[in-house]
Length: 321
Image 1 (cartoon, rainbow, N blue to C red):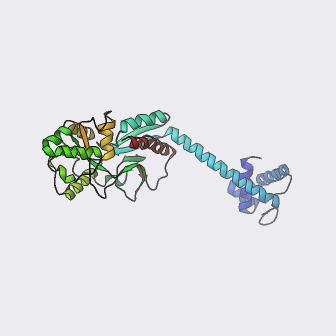
Image 2 (cartoon, helix red, strand yellow; image 1 turned 90 degrees about the horizontal axis):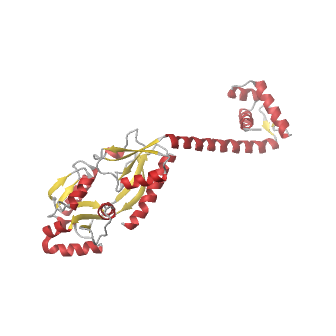
Image 3 (cartoon, helix red, strand yellow; image 1 turned 120 degrees about the vertical axis):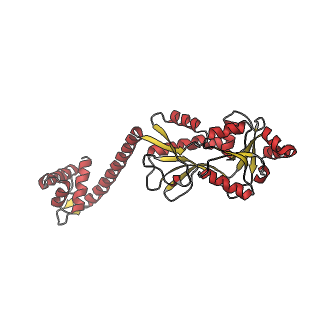
């Protein structure tokens, strides 16, 4: 008795006759009939009544239940083995926004590759023009970053936050605000929210026009009643950080991103850092780092491992920021 015995028996039962089952299985009627007789001799009981159509005996009912369970278990096993083959053979292509990759991406990739050395991973830069990431190219399995929601992508949140800050060098703050700088520093270190309009005289480094992030910045500055003076534009996050660290400009960021770059990555505490992260009022604003994949695709074993590793890396990090 083996899986073939189960397949043949189920086929005969579902077809009603040995002849029809043999036609469906592409074997001779004689061979299938002999196989059934051999199976019943092995069991020691008749499994099918020789009626037209054939019906189950009581022993046949028990045998059918077991046969279907075994065939279902084999199907599940084969699927898992096939998934494992794909997992080991497939290169997982993850898209990230060009010039504005997820925070601490190199550190996470190092963590992931250490955790899953068996999995090939490729990072693909994607345009972050407004609306461009409501769908992703066919050669990309998923995207990682902060993207607009849409019915073509399913978003898997990794971390999320509703706090936003103006990151500004202490020297720039003193130069722009003068005597008011001390109060701003006090509120910043206490984690209390301030009005964005308080920084209206600061030069800002902004994202490029037409990008999703810049659209959000424009909306918030407009709501605060001003346009940044002497602002600079760049799509490069590293350059943005450098300009802020050199006291050339302030930058508006989700609080976890600002703290990750200015404190965690620099190995500095907030009190000793030359950069202040001034929390500002940003009602109804929301930021999330997500992994998103097309709605119509099933998440693969490899992508599931990627998401699990990302949560393992970022969730404890959020508690330290």
